[in-house]
Length: 135
Length: 439
Image 1: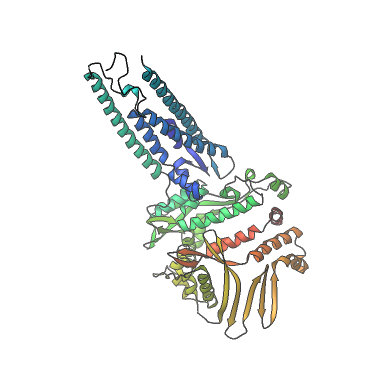
Image 2: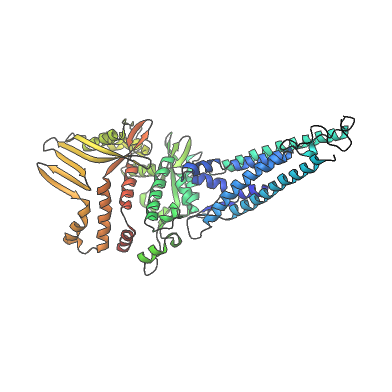
């Protein structure tokens, strides 16, 4: 989850010699788009809130809830990262996506998804063992 | 009753979501939980709550860092606004430069770039995924720009002039080859893509020629300062006329509907009533004109030589407003015969004194070819011009109006960009190639 969050603070967009992280890119591009895309860009800082929520839930031992939130969070950020990576880091153009941030975010999102699935699956197995008991 | 090793009553089902089995109290045969286990659980819970609070605070700080450092538009002072612009120019950051401008100017520029980009994509000249900035091939680069930080001139509460004293700015136009389609590049440039063109401006030399530093106007909008293109142009005009910014602004005069705004503005134009012409333009996008207007109107004389006796428009929704497209107009001069202009089937037909003159754009190519001066022009260029004006003839010529505070105003900026959009919209890829080759 932390790798995922760190990825969002790495470069996502290049305009000339200026590099922008995902939050700066969302602000800079917000005025250039409208409709659903604009709404998504406005909501992008929620990524940090979702990260904090997941970790807090995990710390409170609500691990399955944390895992479910992590799954949703991981899938969403992975989709965005894949979408940006799909645009490719084009050279010789003025404004272009940068692959560093999205790639790290995608790795973090994948790890978060695997971990979340592991938590859900693990707690399910333990539930089965405990509930069976001797008859 | 529970047997040793058997799950206690009520425990045969899975625990509630999120409640791990490790955390559930284990009931002993005596019915009492051991104290150390309860204490350990409580301790774990306290650690968990503390950790959760720490994480929530960290999340809040991270959100603040992300949002506050995300380059929100505007700056706290005129100097900061200008410095921000210079920094973005130095980085060749066109996205940043456009976003540095006041929201109204930035929106106008973005819409012009987007329209041009969309048109180039439609005729398959650029790749579908090309950005607006790259499709139009614009670039800007600066080195060593310096402001005279001690000389910010505060015109009034919302206009301040910063002074640029040194550095160079290079403006470039060129084709970023990987943004254009292969088919277009091969057809347009069979001998290879030409190098881009650029112009470099030396600020120190310009300041020497002007006799004063290069003035960049900044404007306050919603509590934030922005470097303004329109205010800089207005300031430059006033400087060249040796005039100062007027103390009073021209109050906006709106209309209830777009057609009325366009009609009132046209009548003001025919009356040569500069104050009325300015008052009826959008106070949002033409704020600079309203602010400098008093300095202009001193030079004009109002007449009532021509009256609009009848006018009708067709409304068309366009980016950012409504375009009032002229359908017909009857003008009555004070000393003369009425003139009627009617837009019909791709032609503008003018009738005066029983005589009719038609300007049918569809036949422009043949008229151009017949003209002796036009015979030297390439056939492709004449076709391109014909296509451009055919589109205007079909769509009609209009005035874009925008709404502000429930009143409608003429918007000259958007009228010009819409006119350019209509011209571009009529071009084919071959027309664009002909225009580029002629250039």
